[in-house]
Image (cartoon, rainbow, N blue to C red; front, top):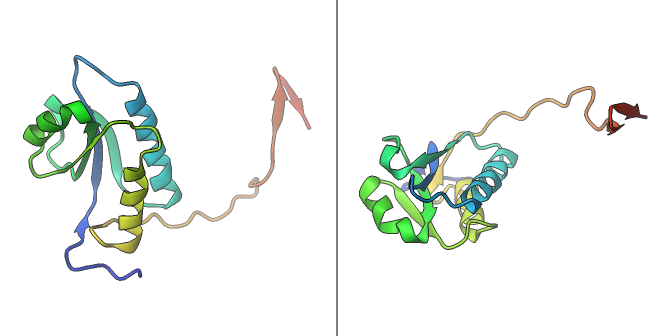
Length: 133
């Protein structure tokens, strides 16, 4: 299951693209959801929000609103384009993570597991500026 397929490519950069004349607010929600999923799985992949007119050259996967699919193909012809109708909890995020875990279409470096800290599991609560113990 952890064996990579011969066609698997390294995934180094994911971009959520938009245009300067219209920035969908849910794009940020989808960006944060995928970023948290990648962090939980400990994958070391660069993520960013960029306008289609200013994309970096090394974009591997580009998430865009459905109405920008054609503009995204022109802006990043070598990238995999994911045109989404909704960015909120989209199944494409889980599919991408699954492909990375299985090494089917993509591979990525993993961050080493962090050792547990001394304060892990300690909950501090506050009421205003007063600490409650």
